[in-house]
Length: 609
Image 1: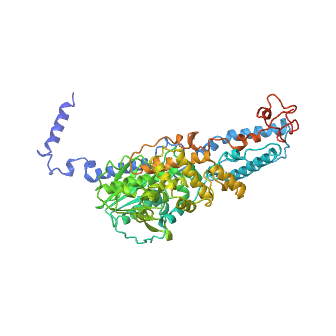
Image 2: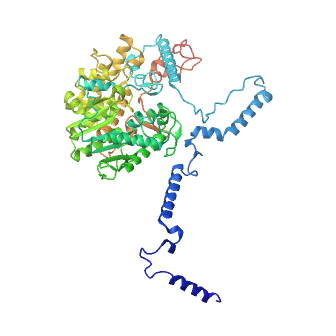
Image 3: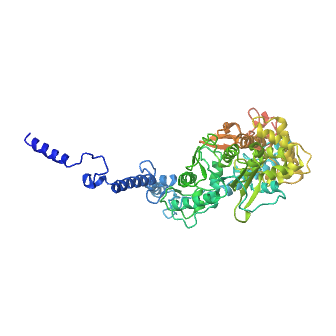
């Protein structure tokens, strides 16, 4: 109360010191607080933005499984597990040592202590089951034919029934080591191009371009780049250079799903070290190994997509996919025809963008890729898209060339063009097995020798759900010609017996059984008919692979090779009993009305008595 009048006087003097119009530009810097100046405010905003950017790049340490804020290298899950359990594992080994050498006396104290095969951060370990799988297959074949020889001494076998079943749980003609057989897809391009003249001119007259983003990242190495920010600048320079002669360029990226059918294929390529991608993260020394990690690629693709769209300020337009959406430069407008889009692979999503370009009035388009699948889909869908010219800038280095899709369609004809997708899937792609020792050229020659297959191929592209008996008979005849061009046989089971017995072919160089071929056909129809054939639809309906030659196992899709048991379990001639005395009653051989053999416990001496 005592200080009230004095405070009121001071306030009045302070207010009298201002001019009447305090909102005008006459207010000097002395009338404001020192932090209200423009330079201080701009610096404050800059500092806040820098802090937010740093936090976003480093990530939330409480949301991550590992402390990788400095190096950005994420520790693999197996390494984390071993490090967490290393004390308990050592303790367990100690008690085991004491028990075996002092309590039970089962081992000498001088015996070598086995090393713990722990997965370390510097050496995460590799898995290679190919040699072991091949050895197991050979052992199974040897055991099977040994048993057949012994059984044939006293029993008459049904050879036709034997060749209706695979020797192993996986068909040797389609699988190796229990996994899909891989092959060279690029050989198909030689068949498609024939004697067409290649163009190596980099300045073809086109209106728009579509870049296969993952393909560009693979052949556009980081070079001398130190950080991912530097690499983004190199990538953007490449895009801007490609944009010089066109008005629009679209960059399409893959989407990685946990239950993808390509998981097995990606695992076979290996898995590099997980490294978080940010502007300040240093480029890893081994670029191919970095790209073998799915999470690395997913984060890198999203990073590059945002950079390309937001940092280009030219007069032309850049579109880039980000997950199921699309971002664009300042002068672009995103159409509902390209986003949202549910395609997983950039290979098929590319054609959603090409269709949009055609609808916008563009007539000449170029695709930049290194994947044969893109060429196949381009040939199959060219007439439906409605372009005048469609070019594919394919390959790298000395193999770089321009492939004229319109020229290929004119050369092979519309019927064969529209049937090409199923032919390519059936003879081997990323999600469908290749035939053993039967590449794309052999299959193409069989197609030329058997043109009736065209109708079946086209039917399974346009109506994949309709796998009729007539269609399967046509496909069986086509496969027989792939393995023997002079054969008159119609079915693969009969061809298996003929090639094995008359021409002494190895078991992996004869066709698969009809049951295995049916499952193979389902997988090819799913890929060609449900995925590739809908490449022009932004959000296609794709059924569950569970009805198309796949089954879910521990959260991942695995191949159903055949629905019939292997020969060792299916052929009655290989039955053997465990009877040690008279073979009667519950004796397997007695119930099957078969004579015992040397494979039986009775050594075939009972003769059913």
